[in-house]
Image (cartoon, rainbow, N blue to C red; front, side, top):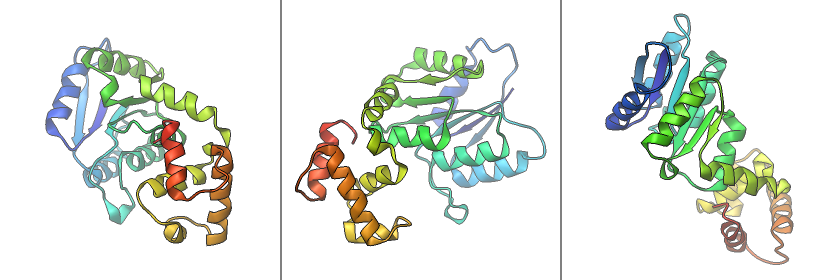
Length: 218
């Protein structure tokens, strides 16, 4: 079984290898390790005509490869899926924000999404075991994020989620069109919808973020 591990911490890669060695997979495991988006891109392109990866374990926050528009583990996961549709993907992240986790699910639809603070070695082994069998595995924070956002259907729109993420990063409303394929008036309309969903009659960006944080979305 070919296993691709992408993480910028070598000790973490060694840990994943060790844990997988205790799994109940009845196959020998051949590991390929990458430490950033650049290495991952080259490995994926090289492997394209040679062998498929059965499993890819990807850290969300890895150094980018801007020339190929690969900025994090989600971008790499999508690249892998385009070359190896059958590869089972597990994304591991330190992010606990519901919107970030939901975005990963929507963009990648990985077989596994695990928040580091949720899991220990035993649960990690269980997750990998389930994923290698073709099942899905989500850690507790991911399950809560799905449930929370499904109760706010209007916020599930990808663009609305992106607007909230950008506001949380400190991007001003006047600068949002440069980050989105929207006009200033379209941004304002979407912000109005977001306010309606959050029950804000009057308020600014800080009011939006405050209400979003109350809901546990950020």
